Length: 419
Image 1 (cartoon, one colour):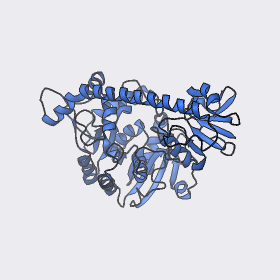
Image 2: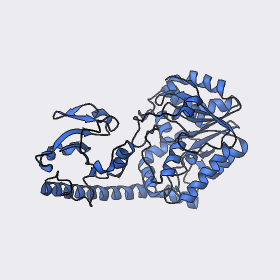
Image 3: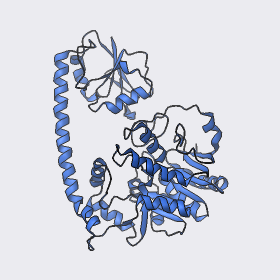
Image 4: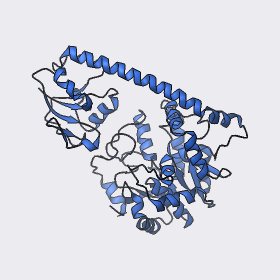
């Protein structure tokens, strides 16, 4: 009997106890791309996107919260009957005939206790973050004058403004602020002094046809999922808040960057409200000629109907990562092909700058970030999830995207810049 093990490399010393003598561990699978193609005790480690599916009789998942990993394997074409979720409470260890049941039971109990300890610690941490941030959340509701909060308009008003006045928009999230502060998230854009300066300047800009949107993380965070509130509280320390405040014009009215997050930051079971948010956005490009400017594996609108009400869609393809390195050429291409079109940009912090420069030149350009992925997640209805053929820097598939055969997508590409 041949098996593969997904995750659990730190528990490798236990594997010789867990499996019966007739079981051979053929290879490891791990989402840590730094381990890909390396070996551990002479056994090869594969990426989930590259492993040989015809060798192992079963793939045993040694990840405690296994659901997302299991779905990832299914999306990549693995038959569900070949997948064993080791930490599933409903798993019968005797069913497959590969486990030493006493040792397996002991490990499952140890991991469950460890998991519960971590959950308790996370709850304690979340309570601490809540208490630290509570003053600002409360102030946003009762408006105490000596506590400062940035002025951030609602998502609904941001959408109405774009629709009614055809305003362009640049968005700022934690990634853009970290670049300004010299701590870029290397996954999609390394630190760049020129980019940091442009981002800092645009924050303070006041073009009449251009909206500067920031993530509304400073006050009550009303309506957001509890998990998202906890994440924001963890990030928004007093030190981080002061860093942001030093960069913002506290008298300026900002718009809401969460316009590009219609689904995943809100309660996932509130489908009707999410559907309305997407419907409001779709009015913006109804019967418009769209020019997408996106990464080479972003593929906005491919495989879904998010932009089906547009008159026509065309594309400029740029690098998924470090797109600002090709900025001048990218801006020239946008101005060449973007006349009389709605330009929708999904290109990380480069989109923030590009939308501003295009607006200044008289174009209509929106930085829409993860909007297409949000729609994919909404359609699946499971919150964050793996979308095999689309680039995502937040969940599985961040730098590994499956191939796509779509003549309509290929025909929509006007040019490629930097790729």
